[in-house]
Amino acid sequence: MSTIDERISGALSEDDRAFLSSLDEERGLFTQIGDTLTGPLGGWSKLIFVIAIVVGLTMVYAAYRFFTSPGGEDLLFWGLVSLGALMMQGFIKEWFYNRMNMIAVLRELKRLQVQVAMGREGAD
Image (cartoon, rainbow, N blue to C red; front, side, top):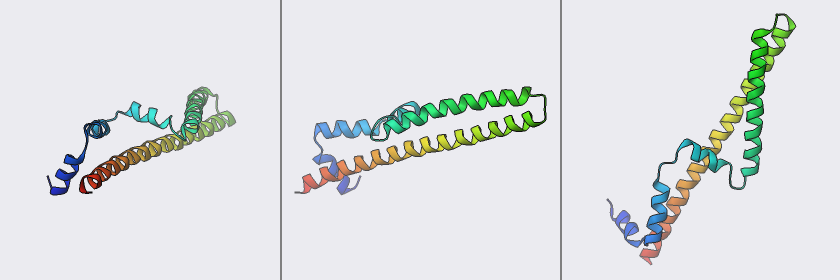
């Protein structure tokens, strides 16, 4: 451990240590998904989550109709609907995972801010 790490560690109060240790815990997938449904964009995330369910059900129905259609124009229509729903589902998942990644990065930044602030308090 370097000198600065020792100074930061020595400057932390017990509450700060508890806060930092809670940030160090591994966060599972469902916990991270739950984090995306809260905060300033929580309402939008909930709306997109509902849309993702609707798009998923539409994709399953369209795929069923594709495989059970007699052929011709129906086959082409339901195939395109299935493909479109699959692409929409992919974009929605990408948005959710980008949001989860952003929240994880902000969490780490907050942890570093606390550590730097505690280090400055110890230096003053």
